[in-house]
Amino acid sequence: MTKDMARAITGGPLNLQPLQIENLRNAIRQIQERFAPKEVELIQFRGEPYFIAYQPPTTKEEAEHWITNNAINAVNLPQENPHVFVSIIHPDNGVMTSFSKEVMEQASREAMPNVPVLDREWLTDYDNYYHQTTTSFELGRHKPAYVLPVLRVRYSDENQTWLYFTPSLGQMVKFDKRDRANRWVYYGLHVMDWPGLFNRRPLWDIVTIALLAGLAAISITTLLPAFRRLKRHVVHGWKWAFPAKKVRTTPSPGMGYVRQRSHYRRLTATKRRSGSWSR
Image (cartoon, rainbow, N blue to C red):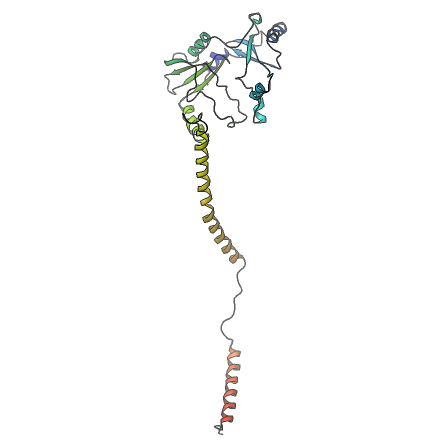
């Protein structure tokens, strides 16, 4: 994000000068007229400081929107939940739930000055890049809330930048050609986040389970060759570490002499019994 983009939303570095005690009290008093806030967050939008307060849940159904699946994600507020803004400089103007569309369009012109605009469109439905995806990915990272309506502005620059301006949050989300390619490679392949499939249940579940089953089958079929190869290596290593003792197979010279004398004695005894012995 460039300095011009950041300045178009924040208005520059944070200005603490207007944060007077009386202004802070009046701003919080305006919020308390709507609901009792648990905490307030200080933001700066186009050079003016604001308090943003989220309405605490009052029912079990509302509380489910605040549940996070990771302890690290507790630092990321669920920005799409009901909330209000109040100006610290002009707290008497009351609270508001969104900034005006005219202000967001002016911010879009200041974000990339002197860059031609291909088109500027207010979206009331998600497109292939600005949309909610699987929440279990990128745990712990500060993620923008994709809420509607949103102003999408596509610029004719080298990086083919697309900017999304959200009036209900006073935020801007950037997608250039690299971000859009990463969206397909990362979420498309890892989460099966494809148009016409991701939001169609149970079709998404069937396709995902079938692909996972195929990958599991491929993994299992490699176990048998791997086991045979490992067995060969173990046997070879065992023979190398514990070689078998060699067994003598040829007779010694002394044993040959004993066998000759034994054969001579048997032959002499046979001739004596048959009477064929002569001196």
